[in-house]
Image: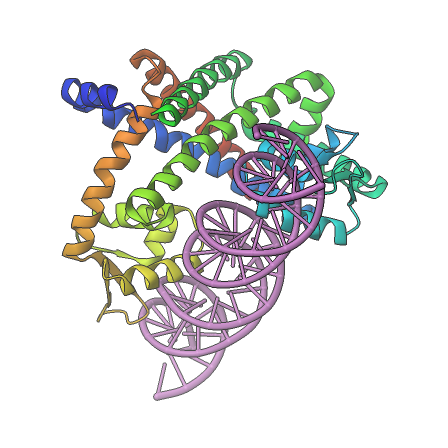
Amino acid sequence: MNAVDAETALADQPEGHKDELRLWLRLLTCTTLVESEIRRRLRQDFATTLPRFDLLAALERAPEGLTLGEISRRMMVSNGNVTGLAARLEEEGLIARRTEAHDRRVATLRLTPRGRREFARQSAAHEGWIAALLGGLAPEERAALMQLLGRAKASVRAALTEEDQA
Amino acid sequence: MNAVDAETALADQPEGHKDELRLWLRLLTCTTLVESEIRRRLRQDFATTLPRFDLLAALERAPEGLTLGEISRRMMVSNGNVTGLAARLEEEGLIARRTEAHDRRVATLRLTPRGRREFARQSAAHEGWIAALLGGLAPEERAALMQLLGRAKASVRAALTEEDQA
DNA sequence: GCGTAATTCTTGAAGCTTAAACTATCTGCC
DNA sequence: GGCAGATAGTTTAAGCTTCAAGAATTACGC
């Protein structure tokens, strides 16, 4: 949090704070509603979970495989988290792991053929679910929302960067 | 998912699906960025967690207290979840629990004076964090985003309701 | 080359979360 | 009264998540 900005905002427009809070709560509600439904369907229809699905999705986009560290960055979760997820998925035969010869600290994951098949099924269904949930928005509403969320993302990232430098 | 809608959408505009998926991923990214930061700060500055904070927030808005069931509905989490959270917060002396005489199945929670004080500190900081993170948006951008997220929420809720009836 | 620092991943402890099964209580109907 | 069903909460097992500490390996500076 930038101290000057926060002070200024507090002094000048205490009402603005409430606005931002309400915006955040609504953002969170939307995400939670969609996410809960996706989790529920993944469990019900495929007996799997969202983190498993996300990990497979990351690997699907990288046919040459990904290291655990890259996956943890892309999924925005901790290293230890990926360790456990990968262990379960490997045990289920959906991914394969290989330690790299040129740097034996590094482990690379990739989809097995079965993992690829399984993810293809899940992914198609997932796309349909999302389309149905957000289908009530007109295309131009979706475009406007996309743009504004881009602005929001930039705002958050900028605030986080400032904080790092402070 | 409404079967007819999904079929129609798939047949008519395969491209639209990708749009909705991208919108969803961006929504999720925004939420995750903010949420991670809030969790990090709650832990760092107050040695607490987001679910604890959320539960206190729910109680703060209801001075007369809330039952476990009402809390679980407001927080959109399971019953068992609230049981555990409440147990920890009670042990820490931030909330008090009372079983109702008129219905001995029901337990009502309310903030202790210490819980109220503690939440006030956390809440003020929280409001500032959110304001700083979303402060990069112009007021009119925030208003537009608020409105569009309202539309998105309505779309999701409508889809979930249709599904229930199916 | 050798030691220090950085990187990559794993482990362990704690907490969060859910679904499903369970207990206790209450409501309504005969 | 007494039983059937509904309701409120708890428990349990499994998985997810984080942080902090640690192990293995590599990179760098001298």
